[in-house]
Image 1: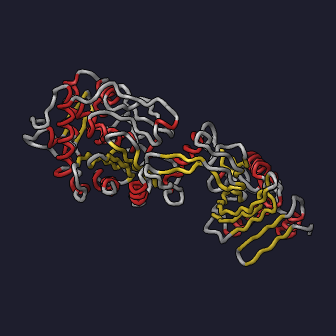
Image 2: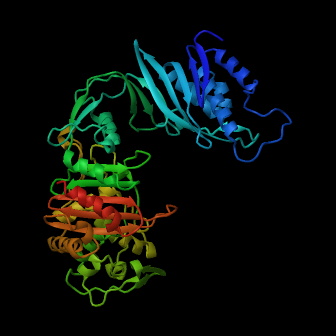
Image 3: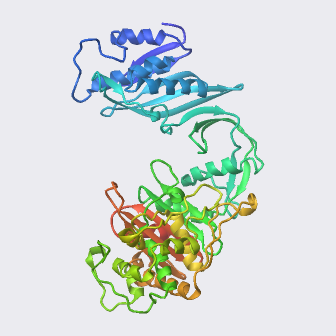
Length: 541
């Protein structure tokens, strides 16, 4: 065995330690496995079939980890089901991260999945820093040979890597930032995990402007304009200080709220200023869906539709409104949840109970398929290219005709929103005027803030707020909003999502000056899942 290379198996744990790149570990591995290290089956060997066995799983995992730790990227790639991609990625990993003294420790397999730990030393510009992390691989049968192979994906190298991303050490990235809430309290990702992608973007945009100087870091580098994600700091720089509009107390409530459901998002804004008070997500991928999501918002869209109908004089909050069990528009049938109907009811009652047919029956009277999109843009600021201080999707209500236009009236079809969009819609309903959401003050960079063409008609705004109040006290939102004090209003919603298997639960509400919205991937009415999340955020105001 060459000096600096050690291989050991203790119980079910496999360890490879490499002091330098060479073939010592490879030779030892050959002796342990009888020399079976090639990525292809011997010529003439029948293709293996059936489930991958426990022994095959252990052998493929150990072979891959041994070769990787030994610095033989081609050999390691040969143990995968995509050797070309694997070899390229492993080579980039080794050179771009400046790792040395690498060890790979495989834990006990669970079926065909094998957890493992990588430890190494990252050396760059005279700095040496230990680096340890855990990852996992899965063994599958190769399509051609049937031999056990590591199912290749970027996350095998590091669990935070996505396909198309890579690791690198950099001293040229933007400086770190010290983010503060509106009162000066520091906002850290350790205390507020949902703020990770937000803090990354603040760093990217404002680190230098805020007076910071860069350090040396190992980062995940994405494609396009995506902000780098720091994995390891080799040498600290000087962070810039960025004051945000967030409220630490409301943010803490939002973080706690989204933990109740996976795949959930919530956002809260000030109705009076548009300042974002909280943003939180509970997602496996760490994506800021509250700001960037694009999904049908269900009946929370009826806030915008009701505003349109009120402004056109087609309805009045206290005037009669038909709510049959079903309604047809240009060949498309729309129904209410559980087939309910309302006899001799008002438009307020239809709004409070979320009657779909009451809205669909009025689309002909609006006489303009594009009217809803204009209302969303000109009054509620949807789609106006918001400049919040971090990337956002700003909602979309494209022009449609026929049954698709009718579906938009109740938040289905091609309407796309996220929690921030619906929180802003709710804030506009409360204030009567759109104020573009911001997460950092405009004074930081003098960016241009979006403004809507006009305010909501005063009479329509008053009636809309009253209908939302009725929904919060005696409609579909009453149970969720029961514990919320102050001047309060709400709207519930649910929306089917193709290929998701379960509907999205939506909830929008205001309490005094704070407006909030949430979306949760959960069955049931909007008030059942998303409602309690929003209520807990509003109670933190």
